[in-house]
Amino acid sequence: MSILAASLMTLATSPLCDIRDHGAVSGDGAHDTAAIQSAVDACAGTGGTVLIPAGDWSTGTVRLGSDMVLELAEGAVLALHPDIALFPAVEIARDADITPARAALLADGVSGLRITGKGRIEGNGEAFWDRDFYASGLARPTLPRPGPAIELANCRDTHVEGITLANMPAYALRFHRCDGVSARGITIRNDPRSPNTDGIQIRDTSNAVISRVDIRTGDDAIVLKSGDRPVDNILVENSYLESDDAALKFGTGSRVGVTNSVFRNLTIAHSRYGIALFMIDGGTHRNNLFEDIAITTGGRHPRQFPVFIDIDRREADRTLGRIVDTTFRRIAITTSGASLIAGNPDAPIEGLVLENVVTDVRGAVDVTRRSAKPRGNVQIAAQAGSTDYSTRPGHMVLAHVRGLVMQDVSFSEAATTDQRRAIIGIDVTEREGE
Image (cartoon, rainbow, N blue to C red):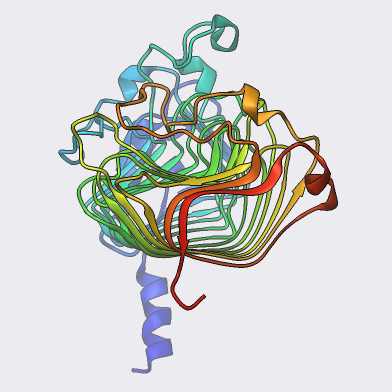
């Protein structure tokens, strides 16, 4: 039998598990959790497709399986039911920084899973927050809430494509301890004020591709965190990112580090940070490339950082981490803020390359009047030995850097006529031979 014939036979014999055949009724006011779970149980392991057809559906936690497709058809809206009891807390992995997940779609230890389609997952975010949350003055909701909406943990060969996630109560999609995974062509839409609504989290995961995504959210658009193992060989490309916090972030909680990763062909807009690399937990970020990226800062915050890099400590008795061999190439910046790239006197940034970085400064704010650098989390305080160069009057501040290579780093004419200097260097040495 030919390969084509075998493939056609597989398609012909793979079941289609329509949730309506398992008891789901569109728009009837009841949640469809049991019907969706029944369809998943019928299709898992067969290569078949669980179909969520056009219509209005509602769910609590559903556990997905291996060797199956979950398809949200065009016109399908799968809403998170507002009863938090339908989202039991599930411990996925023992990790000091991870609380149990209350996911809508949960896959743990699976392979060969596809989540695809043109449908939408509706998070019903405000239904899970404190009453009148936006007017309450609270930094974060005090009530339990679902999150991530999609939790993929300990997975292999697992892929998400095409779907839309909107109005999330917390994180949208998390890859946790996965290998060989991807998100392609997905859309995430959250209010810029929404709390803890990261778009995609990549945690303790290797060999992942994020491509053609469009994320506009209140918290980090894409954040990489390395708790117990490296986040390694990640490709993020051909995407649009917008965040009230960081569009692209190496997050706090990185005790190991992000390594051997590439971020390219990105448009970042209306974000407080364009690219933010935090190292406060003693790990090492190594060999990472950022190229062909357009960054326009913006949003609610008066102080903005198109590029922000910092080495510090979460607590005074912790070891300082490292940031090694980081390259920025063909970066176009439009901002009223300034880039701050700073190591520590006892842990300098090593091997930094800035090549063809162009900054257009518009409506520059007075950085000398806005003190205290960001720390990646409002609950993290300054420690003894911390350095803070955020009020130095430069469009780009470089501090405690070893092995710097700069080529074609320039600033607009407006930037050269205001009261800031173009570049301020503090304890910086260039690479030998440059």
